[in-house]
Length: 262
Image (cartoon, rainbow, N blue to C red; front, side, top):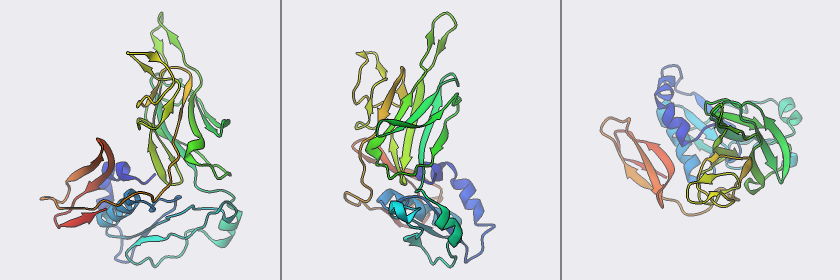
């Protein structure tokens, strides 16, 4: 998954790619609406700056034409000389759009999680482990983010053995848009808080402490206003966040030259 967090975590490795890439190298990023909004545009800009390569990404759905997808990468940085990464037969045989990804972990490693679309369970993930990792489902339907639920299905508390299963869901990515679970517009039915226990509501938490689910809001890519920040760093490795209403909405890596981040 290519987003600001991943680029921040891997920026040193990305810089290292420049040693192996030619001057005409191109990086093709296939994913629904990856370059559609300001955050996505900044992400591909950063990949281009860190690697020195030309970069292309999609601004709409990527995949089968029958699901309103295509294989064109509309957003580019530099001049892309390479053709499509998939031949005609592969594109014709692909009957889906880009997958849904849940980034999650358990406290004991025995937690089970389900993905629901419009109230129907379409995938289950068992014993998901204690390390934060991505769980992916390739959907053949055109699902919107408001239809997505991440469900905790096997809560267990055993005081005698000290067992307390909890599910942490960091984020959900659909059609190239990453939704943070602690966002105030994510609905939860299994989150515990000391002031009122476990009650349904907008809990601003990543954790399900009992069987229940997170339901995500409807998000339309490429909406809203664009914010531009002009900045530079002394060393060229400085990182900074853009906060809106106290929430981090984008992460940037500065260079030693004045640069516009959007």
